[in-house]
Length: 181
Image (cartoon, rainbow, N blue to C red):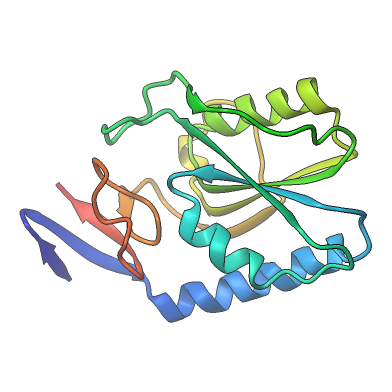
């Protein structure tokens, strides 16, 4: 257990466990995307930045990957989803009819993921659209949405590290930990 300021954080997945799982996901995605023309990967900031960086280094395709970013949130600085998707940065180049892989940190209520996947379908009519998530928290699902690639399924815990935060803190932790408030 780590005690950061007044928060106790108990490690759930070590940096090595995460690295091994991301490498496995990279191989799976590489197999599915190996021969697709000009695949696009869209990272959902800020939480997915560690996962995205490690994942793309483990993906091998015939054509180079185009990497884009958006910033979406339904948390703000709270520990529970607000239920409303905020879109502070949603600018993308023309990726119409391309093979798109969305990379998310976590899917819990599913609202943000569903919103973004529907937005991409409506705006760009991708040739294919899949989603890779570091964490899936199905017990919290409020809308029907499923990821195509899942790093880990977790129970209803509040977690930080490996890009995930609490009030913009703890993203830098190399492991995933449960935070006790």
